[in-house]
Length: 220
Image 1 (tube, rainbow, N blue to C red):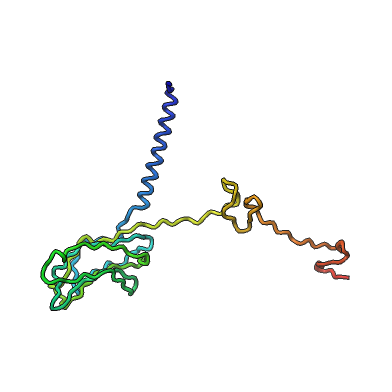
Image 2: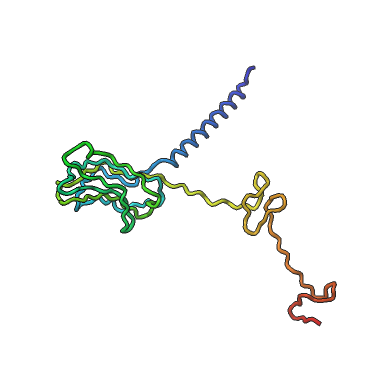
């Protein structure tokens, strides 16, 4: 079957439009889920009297945060005092230690490593502070830990908008959420609640008794 030029053009437009929508959706999802760098420091030498303190980080809009760095703790010893370094986060004066690495006797490959730890949801605060601190019997560079590629990354939280309460039925003809002042009728449609005000007449009712007496009148 032969296709006309117009038919081919229409099919091409349809195909490329569909392809554009798919690619646009992919890019949007990638941007939404992309990680952001909240804190970055190339390197730091940490001693007992010189801890690493990041300063205040506003992480209130981020989740899935990962604190990572590489370390060299060969200068931390096991004897005569057990040296170590700890890392974690804090808000205000409350510290949360995420882990501790102990010093070893001599220099071994076990004293080189990479830390990558996920922060809990409670760390999503406006005054987040990261820290790495050394515990040793000396404040000199003989007891230190060398850190590199210190990073805090996170994914920006996507806030879902509040549901819009419409006052008309949806496409299925059934109102799932009903606005204040409205109710579902027998067909599941959203209708305005009608409140009937009592009618106060100025004359006797059919039974000859006035139930409600208007202002300025009395019962006889």
